Image 1 (cartoon, helix red, strand yellow):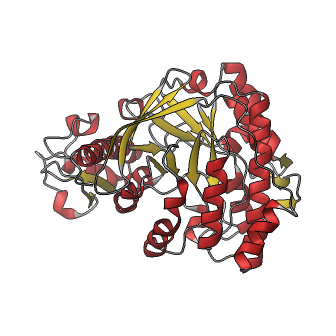
Image 2 (cartoon, rainbow, N blue to C red; image 1 turned 45 degrees about the horizontal axis):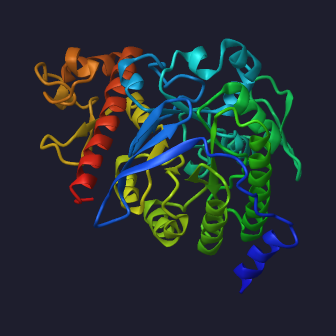
Length: 413
C-alpha cells in the first residue's frame, strides 16, 4: 500500500499528466527475429536521419566526442552503429554553440554512424555524491570511489545549479536547457534530464528523486516536442532498488510517446542484485520500443540482460580494460562468450607469433601487433599500448554482439 500511495502521489498531487502522442516518432524499430526461448531479439532501429542501428549492439562511450585513446575515425569505431557522447562535458568544453557552429557532433567529430547523447544528469549528481565521472571511471556506480567535495550548488524543482569542474563557474541545467543543448549537439538519440542517486541512498531521498525525475522527464518530452529536429528521445526508468517504483516507472514511461526506453540509475550493489532487479521489472517495459541499458556493458552483464529483451548497452568497459592491460578475447570456437587476457603478465613475453584475438580477429591491432609486442609496450609505459588494445577491445565487443545475434536467430539465447 505504501508504494501505491507513492505512485498515486506522482499522478495526482504532483500533477504528472499523460503526455498525448501528438507527434510522429523519429525512429522505427523492426524486430527481425524474436527468440522462442527468451525475450532476446534481433532487430534494426531505423532513424529518420537515414542511419540504421543493427541490434543487439554494444555502444562505446565517447564522452568528450572521442572514444578514449583512439578518437572517432578509427576503423573499430567507424564499424560501431552507435556511440555515446556526454552532454555535460561537451557543453563545458568546447561548448554546445561551438559544436552547433561546426554542424553538430557528426560534422565536428567526423562520425558517419549514429550518436546518442545523455542529459548530463548522471555527471551532475555524481558531483553531488563527490565522485565525479570524468569520462572513463564508474562515478556513482562505483559507490563513490573518488571522494571529493560536492560541486552541486543548489537543487530546485526548476533546475540544478552546479560549479564547473573546469573553472568553478556556476552552471544551470534544467530539463528544458538539457534538451536545448542536445538539439545544438545534434545527436540522433537524446535523453531527458533525470536525478541519479547512489545505490545506498535513503528511502525518502529515493522517493523524492523518483518523483522529480518523472516530472523532469515529462518537461523534457514537452520541450523536445516543440522542436524535434528529427531526433529520437528515450525515456529513462528510475526507482533505485525499489522494485515497485521501477515497475511503475516502466509502465508510465512506456505509455508516453518516447521513441525508446532506457534503464538508468543504480540497480544495486553488485551484479546479483542487478539481475534480481531487472528480472523483476523488465516485463513491464513492453515490446514495441528499443530498450537500452545505461552504463552497463561488461560481457557478463550483457549475457544476462540480452534474454530480458535489451537491445543496446553502453559502457567504458573495453577502454578501461585496455588502459589496464587487459584484452577482450572471444571464444575460439565462435560461440557467444569471451574472457579477459592480461597482457602485462610475463607469460606473453615470448608470444611473437600470436595476436591478441588469435587468427580469427580481423582488427587492425591483431593484423600488426603480437602479444609479445603489446606486453613490451605496457611494460615500457607506452601510451600506444592502451590505444592498440582499445582498438582491439572495441572491435571484439562489436563481434561479440554479432555472435549474440546469431545465437538469438538460432533460438539458443
